[in-house]
Image (tube, rainbow, N blue to C red; front, side, top):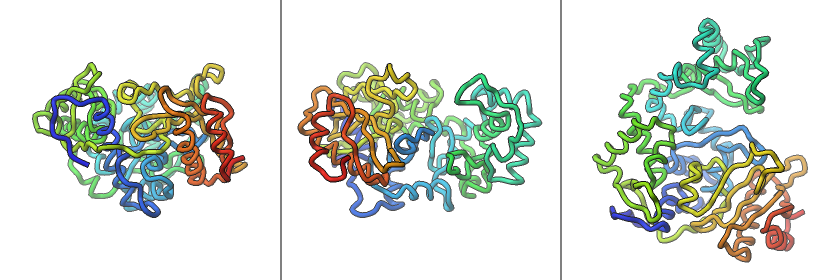
Length: 412
């Protein structure tokens, strides 16, 4: 794999391969059981893992590692995130995320702005009930790690926002979490945060690291995003850590001046793009893997469509009759293109990976895609501890995929 000389322009195919290499899809799969070295390699590529509470298949933060490493022990990630020596911590990166602890100082600008930038309910609690916030922090200091349920007791709870009916104590904890005054020590079996103070969670070396000036922090985070994306337009570099517009633009310009980024034109892109100095251009990508809806490869949906010609929308919050492809739909990356998408559900009670729907992408060959996707579904089922894969119940790939699955063991 060769490093990219700084060209004036890139073809779309080159940009696609550069992106996939930057995201770790050109790296060889581990020969044996993946270990901490492999986890670090992936995190070194992508920079953070987005979290989400939906568990119809597997929690979102576990899936990007699977897509790049194949079947790996999920306990490996749990250990890195929640046991000493801790390598990851929870915070707001690209939404709720697991982030390398080394980036904690670069995110302190966000913590310092909690009173003006945190979500409305958190800001109001901090402004209107400061005594409650102080009491909650004292409780965590004295008794942490603890969940909101451990101390909220009969605290009033709003009923006007279904799905986010947080008590005042929960809002106070989340404000303190945003402000960096508490952090997540772990998660319980219900996926609730156990809060504790940073000095009992984060490594001392991280806590002792001086807080960088905001401009330096923005530059560091944009550099991480640029390395993870390989080649990207400015809005995508900004979106990776949800940075302020003007600050991100300034950071991009400074990184260009420093030689970290080089302006480049990508065929078909309206916006100018930036190529990272360490970007690699492989001759090919040999991926055959499913990708999470929350994978950094496809976070920015407009970029995904420009790069891959793949129009993707998550439909979790769409009423069932209005869904086009399904509830929890994963794209199938085959080579350097998305060739299919499948709606999946882990039926843990019966030990079955259910496939409510499977769809072929325009231009893809179902005869080539169905066997590769069937292999991947069996691999995913095995990783999830499921014995069987059901044939798809709907979708235009239903027939070819059913035929392949019917000829293999482990299909119900």
